Amino acid sequence: MELISLRLKLRLIDNGDLDAIHILHSLPETDEFNALGIPENSAETSSIITPWIAANQEEDIQIYTFAIEESTTNQFIGLFGLKLGAKKYRRGEVWYKLHVDYWGKGYGTEALNRILDFGFEDLKLHRIQAGCAVDNIGSIKVLEKAGMLREGRGRQLLPLKSGWSDNFEYAILETDDRKRTSN
Image (spheres, one colour):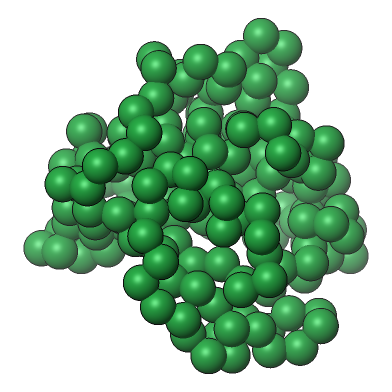
């Protein structure tokens, strides 16, 4: 499965992505607001992504993990996840992590918009939500540029290296106005 936007290709991750994902998870900049922590070695990264790859191969996928690539170069630039909730609620939750070299260039917003299109148009979701640390200004900008609304603040939800962080809760509904991607 591949999702295409103007500058990006999102494809389901596989074992061939291990080295790129390990590098991404090892960057102090991408670890600052991430509760995962920096893996000690590639074997630890492999243990993290093995369940993601298995979930991507299920007949009725409930957890999607995509590699984000520049479409012209196929350069790996990050990860994007979409976890579906119970079918009755038609809800999903997104997360993403971009390599620091690609911050501030609109790639996060472009990838999020493409995932929102996929969630609402293909998966027929009603609501897609996300959370981010209150000090993660870059992610706040990405979520808001895509039309997600801040709904609340969870107190001390995220165990970060710097200590417990509050978390902003964001969501968008299928009926909300939002920026559409160019396919």
